[in-house]
Length: 107
Length: 114
Image (cartoon, rainbow over all chains, first blue to last red; front, side, top):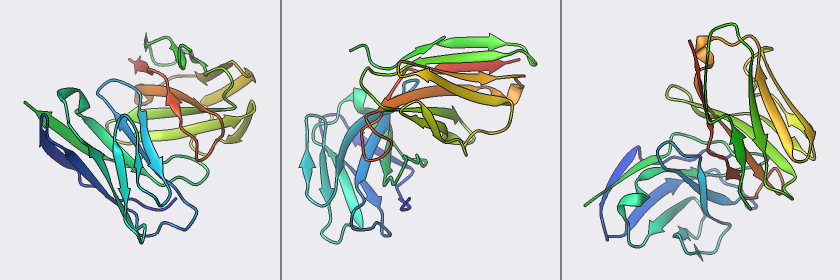
C-alpha cells in the first residue's frame, strides 16, 4: 500500500471547518484515497473516498491535489460528535490503518 | 439492514480457556474481515475471506488463532488457548469485495484474558 502521513492530532472549534491533511506521495495512478474515522469505543466508519476529482457527500468533502500526492478531508461544520481518530488510507487489496489524526472538537 | 453483528460484545476469560468470537456480515457482502485493536499496535488486519474462502491470513498472530467462515452469513474467530496478551478489541467488517469497497465494521468484541 502507498504510505500515508497524517498529523498526530488537531483541534477544531465547534461550528468551524475541520481540515485534515494527508500526504500520499507514492500513490499510483489507479489507487484511491479512502477516509475512515473511529469514534471512541466504536468500530471504524467509512467517510468518503476519491481517485482524482474532489468528492462531497453528506459527511464531508475530499480535496485531492492535481498531482494526487496529498489530500484534505473537510468537515464543513464540526460538531462535538466529530471528535474521533481519522484515518487516511490508500488501499490495494486491503485496508491498512495507520495511526491516523486524533481530532478534538471543542465547544 | 442491522449492519455487521458481533457477539459477544464483552468477554472475560481466564488464561488457557478457549474463546470464540462470532460475526454476521451484512447480507449480500462477499468479503469479511477480522481486525484486532490494541493501544500498542493499533488496528491490525488478522484475516479476510472472499466468498467464504480465506484469502490472506498473514496477520494471524500464531497457531492459537483460527478463523472459519462456513457460510456467507457467519464467521468465527477462535483463540485456543487464550493468553493475557490476546486482550484487545476484535472487530469484524464486511464489504462487497476485498478492495476499493467500503468496509462496514461491527461494534467489536472487547476481550479480556486474565
